[in-house]
Amino acid sequence: NLNLNSIDCIEPNTFERLNYLKKLDLSSNRIKTINKKMFIGLFELKELLLNSNLIEILDFDSFIEMKNLKMLNLKHNISSIKNFKLNI
Image 1 (cartoon, helix red, strand yellow):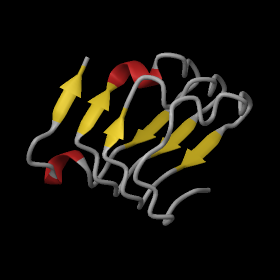
Image 2: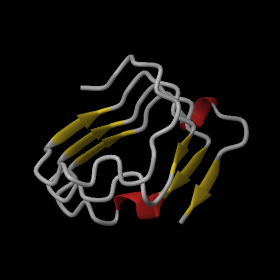
Image 3: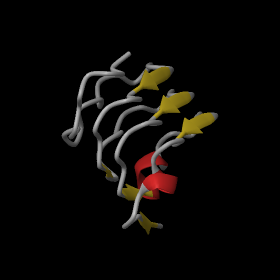
Image 4: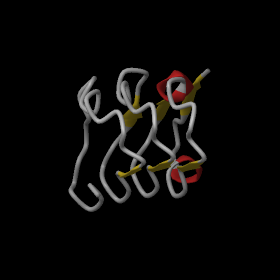
């Protein structure tokens, strides 16, 4: 659980050794960008909470390795963003 930690940036490959992690809560931080190298190695992740951040750029390739992802929460980000950019 990494929510409410004022995280504004996550370096590429930060989670690459957490192959068996099932849930990652990054909600209520200050994350602005979701890029394709951010979640490398999270093969077993089922639940990813990114709600209540400041996401402006979202690269959907970020989730490509997450074959088991069942729930992705992006609430309270996109709807309040003025310059939202979706990279598909």
